[in-house]
Image (tube, rainbow, N blue to C red; front, side, top):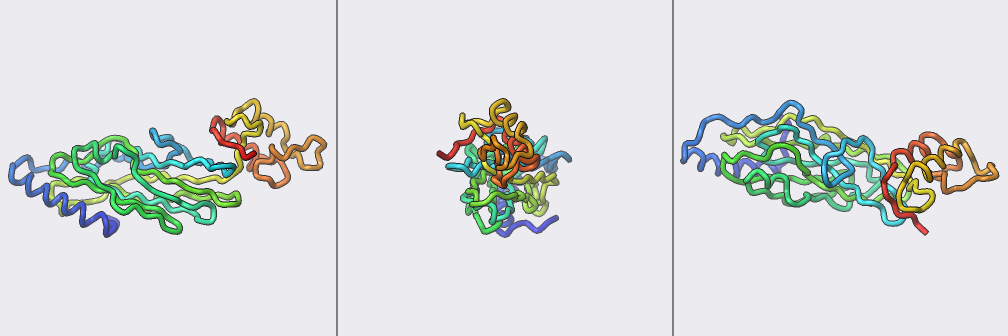
Amino acid sequence: MNVLTKAVWPVVRLGLLAGAIVFAAVGVGQESQPASASHTQVLLSYSNVSPIRAATIIVNPDGLPRDVYAWAVNVDNATGVSGYHLEIGFDSSVFTATSIEVPLPMWLGSGARSPGCPFPTVATNRAYIDCVTIGGVPPFGVTGTGLIGKLTIQPGSVAGFSPLDLTGTFLINTPIDPDDLAEIPVTLLSAQVVYIECADVNGDGIVDLLNDILGIIQRYQWTPAHPDWDPAYDINNDGVIDLLNDILGAVMQYQLPCTQTP
């Protein structure tokens, strides 16, 4: 088992110990609820509503940048989750994390145990938050799918790419015996932020196929030397309409809204 953070371990252990005393006093059962199914996942998502399996997240630096939300957790058939440590690493030269918080109502609160997420922290290259629950056993912790965090970022001044690394993230089970406290096996699905200009070329507030994406494709390999050159179609402002930065950059923004600067 990996070493749990100093913040999570004592609080969860204290809560479970108190619960175990109550549990033993009433003499209910002897076996712990299963910790997790094998396909439990924690994944990043450009959504604060439901899990969306997105490998890439677009941030548009024009005007007021769109908030980037995550970070949906998809916990398929997990059982007995009593706490978690959510940690997202990133490249601070590409963007600044302004806050990390837990959306309300809290997913941990749906399991009939009292949840808490003290001291959310934003550091130079990472943001993290520890969430725990206190209560008897049973009730066990939460099951199923829910949102465990929301990260808001402020893009930098130049285009770039940054991984969103979930390596330090883990879920904690809800054992009857506090000595059995352990991490739940999960698959962590990290993502990447692509920091690029908004591809809403015609300024109607959304990146669509007809006006924006096809317009960029039709100008493939154009440069300022072309008589009909329009810099609005050069999404990354490098002086050429290319496949990777401009066409694919626009395709990844399909149907996303963005606010153009005057």
